[in-house]
Amino acid sequence: MIASLSLERNDAAVRNVAFLPYLVGFFFAFRLFSVLLSVHFVGTGPQVGAAASLAVNFILFGVVAFNSLGPASRTFASFMQVTSFRWVIVFLGFSGASLIWSSTASLPAATAYWCAMFCDTAMVIMLLRLASIELTSAALMRGYVWGTCTMAAIAWCLPAQSDLRLGDEDFLGPNQIGWACAFAFFLAQYLMRNGERGWAIPTAFLAMTLLRSLSKTTIVAFVLGQAVLLAMDRSISRRAKIGLVCAALAIVAAFWSLLSAYYDIYTNAGNQSETLTGRIGIWAY
Image 1: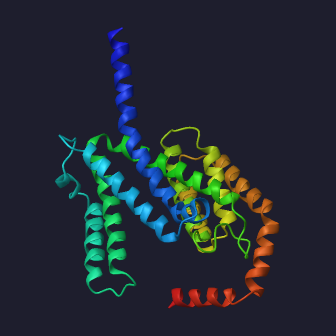
Image 2: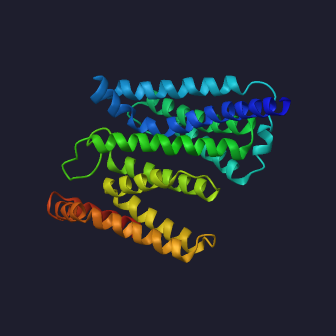
Image 3: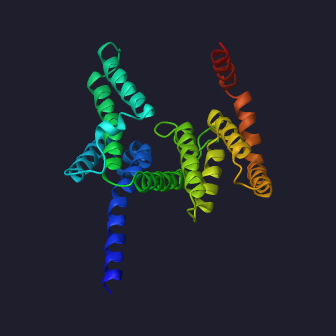
């Protein structure tokens, strides 16, 4: 009896610890949709949507900061021993200092966005101080994956753009959808590698949304990244790897008519093919 009550309390504590990181991760992904939601569903201007996203960002930071008051499992100094964390601090410091000499349309707006980025980093650090790093990071990843799936589901309901790509021409570009889906796919893949189940359908949906976004650079980078992972991951059997490749080819075959139509538009309409060759030239240089 006592043991069962203790287990119930421990389970409740785990759920409470995991909920806030999950909420933060969900917000990190879903806020890409904030301006489009404000304009098309609420009927306000894009500035209101951007301001609302920043406001939620700062409110969430305050909630996390309040929740982190008191003793913690680890100190901020312990994070400084991690090389990647020191690079994060360098990036934040340099980007913040760059506001001094940068020419921007609105310096207060640029400062507000930098503060939001600082709050994002601080929220993750404070969450990692409170509990197990594995538990917290996994909850952050789950929240981001489901937030991206929610955004992707809404994007599928939007009318296609003039060039057949997914998204909105003014407030939610296909590249934004593409890189969010690709990043969420990698996070879900990590969770599956850690033994979590139930991610097959979300990852398939994210992969299809990435392809449907027709975000060319993101798709190429995603395919190369997956090729490296499949080649180096010894825990996946050869049969499973062949099955994954066949599934990817089946998805491409299902979207082949769309890909062909997009290729015709891309090569014949406007100067998109010229901008592509221009970008390739810049990358090569």
